[in-house]
Amino acid sequence: RKEVEQDPGPFNVPEGATVAFNCTYSNSASQSFFWYRQDCRKEPKLLMSVYSSGNEDGRFTAQLNRASQYISLLIRDSKLSDSATYLCVPDTGRRALTFGSGTRLQVQP
Amino acid sequence: EPEVTQTPSHQVTQMGQEVILRCVPISNHLYFYWYRQILGQKVEFLVSFYNNEISEKSEIFDDQFSVERPDGSNFTLKIRSTKLEDSAMYFCASSRSGELFFGEGSRLTVL
Image 1: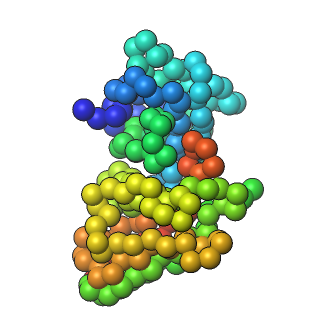
Image 2 (image 1 turned 60 degrees about the vertical axis):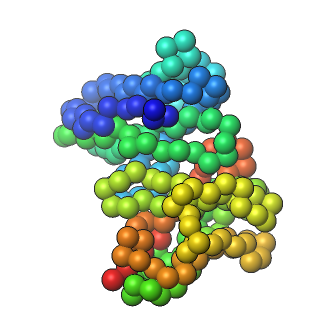
Protein backbone atom coordinates (compact mmCIF):
# COMPACT_ATOMS: atom_id res chain seq x y z
CA ARG A 1 0.00 0.00 0.00
CA LYS A 2 1.29 3.46 -0.88
CA GLU A 3 2.42 5.71 1.97
CA VAL A 4 0.24 8.51 0.68
CA GLU A 5 -2.56 8.85 -1.82
CA GLN A 6 -3.19 12.12 -3.60
CA ASP A 7 -5.47 13.02 -6.47
CA PRO A 8 -3.01 13.64 -9.31
CA GLY A 9 -5.22 16.37 -10.81
CA PRO A 10 -4.71 18.61 -12.60
CA PHE A 11 -6.81 21.05 -10.65
CA ASN A 12 -7.55 23.94 -12.99
CA VAL A 13 -8.73 27.00 -11.05
CA PRO A 14 -9.07 30.69 -11.88
CA GLU A 15 -6.95 33.31 -10.19
CA GLY A 16 -8.40 34.30 -6.84
CA ALA A 17 -10.10 30.97 -6.24
CA THR A 18 -9.76 28.86 -3.14
CA VAL A 19 -8.58 25.32 -3.74
CA ALA A 20 -8.06 22.39 -1.41
CA PHE A 21 -6.07 19.19 -1.80
CA ASN A 22 -6.46 16.10 0.31
CA CYS A 23 -3.86 13.53 1.11
CA THR A 24 -4.54 10.21 2.84
CA TYR A 25 -1.72 8.35 4.52
CA SER A 26 -1.35 4.73 5.54
CA ASN A 27 1.14 4.83 8.40
CA SER A 28 -0.75 5.81 11.53
CA ALA A 29 2.57 6.25 13.33
CA SER A 30 3.44 9.29 11.21
CA GLN A 31 3.84 12.13 13.66
CA SER A 32 4.42 15.02 11.34
CA PHE A 33 3.94 15.94 7.73
CA PHE A 34 5.37 18.24 5.15
CA TRP A 35 3.85 19.91 2.17
CA TYR A 36 6.33 20.53 -0.63
CA ARG A 37 5.73 22.24 -3.91
CA GLN A 38 7.60 21.36 -7.06
CA ASP A 39 7.66 23.47 -10.17
CA CYS A 40 8.28 21.76 -13.48
CA ARG A 41 11.91 20.60 -13.71
CA LYS A 42 12.80 22.24 -10.40
CA GLU A 43 13.62 20.95 -6.97
CA PRO A 44 10.94 20.27 -4.32
CA LYS A 45 10.63 23.24 -2.00
CA LEU A 46 9.29 23.03 1.52
CA LEU A 47 6.00 24.87 1.76
CA MET A 48 4.83 23.96 5.24
CA SER A 49 5.53 21.63 8.14
CA VAL A 50 2.64 20.21 10.15
CA TYR A 51 3.43 18.90 13.60
CA SER A 52 0.07 19.11 15.38
CA SER A 53 -3.48 19.49 14.13
CA GLY A 54 -2.61 22.06 11.53
CA ASN A 55 -0.63 25.05 10.45
CA GLU A 56 -1.32 28.32 8.71
CA ASP A 57 1.05 30.50 6.75
CA GLY A 58 -0.50 33.40 4.91
CA ARG A 59 -2.79 32.07 2.19
CA PHE A 60 -1.90 28.47 2.98
CA THR A 61 -3.60 26.35 5.65
CA ALA A 62 -2.88 22.72 6.40
CA GLN A 63 -5.16 20.60 8.57
CA LEU A 64 -4.39 17.18 9.93
CA ASN A 65 -7.07 14.65 10.82
CA ARG A 66 -5.33 11.79 12.58
CA ALA A 67 -8.51 9.81 13.18
CA SER A 68 -9.23 9.63 9.46
CA GLN A 69 -5.56 9.67 8.47
CA TYR A 70 -5.71 12.53 6.06
CA ILE A 71 -4.13 15.91 5.73
CA SER A 72 -5.40 18.76 3.62
CA LEU A 73 -3.86 21.86 2.11
CA LEU A 74 -6.02 24.91 1.45
CA ILE A 75 -4.84 27.71 -0.78
CA ARG A 76 -6.82 30.92 -0.66
CA ASP A 77 -6.76 33.69 -3.27
CA SER A 78 -4.82 31.58 -5.78
CA LYS A 79 -2.06 33.29 -7.75
CA LEU A 80 -0.66 32.31 -11.11
CA SER A 81 2.61 31.61 -9.31
CA ASP A 82 0.89 28.92 -7.22
CA SER A 83 0.81 26.69 -10.30
CA ALA A 84 2.94 23.70 -9.34
CA THR A 85 2.75 20.12 -8.11
CA TYR A 86 1.98 19.84 -4.39
CA LEU A 87 3.48 16.90 -2.55
CA CYS A 88 2.24 15.56 0.76
CA VAL A 89 5.10 13.87 2.61
CA PRO A 90 4.78 12.07 5.94
CA ASP A 91 7.60 11.96 8.44
CA THR A 92 7.59 8.25 9.30
CA GLY A 93 10.61 8.39 11.55
CA ARG A 94 13.05 7.42 8.82
CA ARG A 95 15.38 10.27 8.02
CA ALA A 96 14.73 9.93 4.31
CA LEU A 97 11.39 11.22 3.07
CA THR A 98 9.40 9.35 0.46
CA PHE A 99 7.76 11.45 -2.23
CA GLY A 100 4.69 10.49 -4.20
CA SER A 101 3.48 11.92 -7.46
CA GLY A 102 1.58 14.80 -5.84
CA THR A 103 -1.31 16.92 -7.05
CA ARG A 104 -0.87 19.26 -9.98
CA LEU A 105 -2.41 22.72 -9.71
CA GLN A 106 -2.83 25.03 -12.66
CA VAL A 107 -4.04 28.53 -11.85
CA GLN A 108 -5.45 30.28 -14.88
CA PRO A 109 -5.76 34.00 -15.57
CA GLU B 1 19.21 32.27 3.63
CA PRO B 2 21.48 29.21 3.57
CA GLU B 3 20.95 26.84 0.70
CA VAL B 4 22.15 23.58 -0.78
CA THR B 5 24.28 24.12 -3.85
CA GLN B 6 24.96 21.58 -6.60
CA THR B 7 27.38 21.38 -9.49
CA PRO B 8 27.28 20.91 -12.39
CA SER B 9 23.82 22.11 -13.28
CA HIS B 10 23.88 19.98 -16.42
CA GLN B 11 26.24 17.24 -17.55
CA VAL B 12 26.19 15.30 -20.79
CA THR B 13 28.19 12.09 -20.88
CA GLN B 14 28.69 9.00 -22.97
CA MET B 15 27.36 5.65 -21.82
CA GLY B 16 29.97 3.83 -19.75
CA GLN B 17 31.68 6.97 -18.50
CA GLU B 18 32.09 7.87 -14.86
CA VAL B 19 30.26 10.88 -13.51
CA ILE B 20 30.70 12.76 -10.25
CA LEU B 21 27.99 15.09 -9.04
CA ARG B 22 28.86 17.53 -6.29
CA CYS B 23 26.86 19.08 -3.52
CA VAL B 24 27.53 21.51 -0.71
CA PRO B 25 24.90 20.94 1.98
CA ILE B 26 23.72 23.60 4.39
CA SER B 27 26.57 24.08 6.84
CA ASN B 28 24.95 23.10 10.15
CA HIS B 29 23.03 20.14 8.73
CA LEU B 30 24.02 16.65 9.73
CA TYR B 31 22.10 14.43 7.30
CA PHE B 32 22.68 14.35 3.58
CA TYR B 33 20.74 12.72 0.79
CA TRP B 34 20.69 12.05 -2.91
CA TYR B 35 17.46 11.71 -4.82
CA ARG B 36 16.80 11.42 -8.51
CA GLN B 37 13.89 12.26 -10.75
CA ILE B 38 13.49 10.78 -14.19
CA LEU B 39 11.59 13.12 -16.48
CA GLY B 40 7.86 12.87 -15.87
CA GLN B 41 8.23 10.63 -12.82
CA LYS B 42 8.31 11.20 -9.08
CA VAL B 43 11.30 12.06 -6.95
CA GLU B 44 13.00 8.81 -5.87
CA PHE B 45 15.25 8.29 -2.86
CA LEU B 46 18.74 6.97 -3.53
CA VAL B 47 20.80 7.22 -0.36
CA SER B 48 21.15 8.97 2.97
CA PHE B 49 24.41 9.72 4.74
CA TYR B 50 25.16 10.54 8.35
CA ASN B 51 28.29 10.62 10.44
CA ASN B 52 30.46 9.76 7.44
CA GLU B 53 28.62 6.64 6.48
CA ILE B 54 25.58 5.51 4.52
CA SER B 55 22.60 5.23 6.84
CA GLU B 56 20.07 4.03 4.29
CA LYS B 57 19.96 3.24 0.59
CA SER B 58 17.31 2.22 -1.89
CA GLU B 59 17.29 -0.61 -4.42
CA ILE B 60 18.27 1.90 -7.09
CA PHE B 61 21.56 2.59 -5.30
CA ASP B 62 23.47 -0.43 -6.59
CA ASP B 63 27.21 -1.06 -6.89
CA GLN B 64 27.48 1.47 -9.70
CA PHE B 65 26.75 4.26 -7.23
CA SER B 66 28.86 5.58 -4.39
CA VAL B 67 28.82 8.60 -2.13
CA GLU B 68 31.58 10.39 -0.35
CA ARG B 69 32.13 13.34 1.89
CA PRO B 70 35.76 14.06 0.98
CA ASP B 71 36.07 17.16 3.17
CA GLY B 72 34.01 19.18 5.61
CA SER B 73 31.78 20.73 3.00
CA ASN B 74 31.35 18.64 -0.13
CA PHE B 75 29.11 15.62 -0.59
CA THR B 76 29.49 13.73 -3.85
CA LEU B 77 27.61 11.11 -5.82
CA LYS B 78 29.64 8.99 -8.21
CA ILE B 79 28.19 6.83 -10.95
CA ARG B 80 30.94 4.49 -12.13
CA SER B 81 29.71 3.40 -15.53
CA THR B 82 26.71 5.36 -16.68
CA LYS B 83 23.78 3.75 -18.47
CA LEU B 84 21.17 5.39 -20.65
CA GLU B 85 18.61 4.89 -17.88
CA ASP B 86 20.72 6.97 -15.48
CA SER B 87 19.57 10.06 -17.37
CA ALA B 88 17.67 12.06 -14.78
CA MET B 89 17.75 15.08 -12.52
CA TYR B 90 19.79 14.34 -9.41
CA PHE B 91 18.89 16.29 -6.30
CA CYS B 92 21.03 16.63 -3.23
CA ALA B 93 19.30 17.43 0.05
CA SER B 94 20.30 18.04 3.62
CA SER B 95 18.50 18.21 6.93
CA ARG B 96 19.02 18.98 10.57
CA SER B 97 15.74 17.60 11.85
CA GLY B 98 12.75 16.42 9.82
CA GLU B 99 12.52 18.77 6.86
CA LEU B 100 14.73 18.22 3.87
CA PHE B 101 16.10 21.13 1.90
CA PHE B 102 16.99 20.47 -1.70
CA GLY B 103 19.52 21.88 -4.09
CA GLU B 104 18.53 22.98 -7.58
CA GLY B 105 19.64 19.68 -9.03
CA SER B 106 22.12 18.37 -11.57
CA ARG B 107 20.66 17.24 -14.85
CA LEU B 108 22.49 14.20 -16.20
CA THR B 109 22.08 13.21 -19.83
CA VAL B 110 23.64 9.92 -20.89
CA LEU B 111 24.06 9.42 -24.63
